[in-house]
Length: 227
Image (cartoon, rainbow, N blue to C red; front, side, top):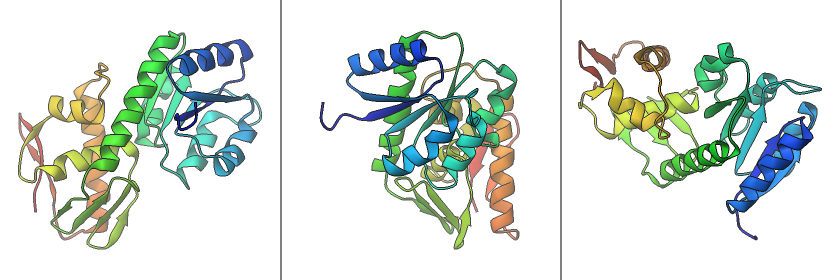
């Protein structure tokens, strides 16, 4: 199975980790497992996988802390696994920068589908040309964004949101249209989720270039990016 994407499963329940590994291998992936939070960062640095499936509750070091450190040096896809529904906003990137989440209990087939969706989204971003709009530069392959030469510290969700808006400057995107672009697995989320991401993105743009307003709200319709 040389050349197949490798998925790192970080799960301290051996039976569950084994089942997930079996399903992922059957879907054409290479799968390896870890059961201790302390081992994740060294493993990723030594042998970067295509995606990390990261449980929230781990011995040694919890998933939130691990995710935070991973995001300090890599933009590889991270899917968090949690039974703590109250953590979902944080997991989606409002604070930590995870690409997706899965709530326990779950179907292994759902996990495989989510893994494929996230990898597909990253591949599409890597193939996209780096747009330049009004002093804004996006490099999807490196997950890097700059405004007027100032680096923007964006979560993956914020990056995809900005990328969608920058691809069609001046166009007004409805919340539903933006949801389709930042979540391609058709999950059910509220308009409040989009508004939260837009609010954070607007703040970061304003910090980088205080004299300009790039992200505009169109009352009753949605949002547009325009200088």
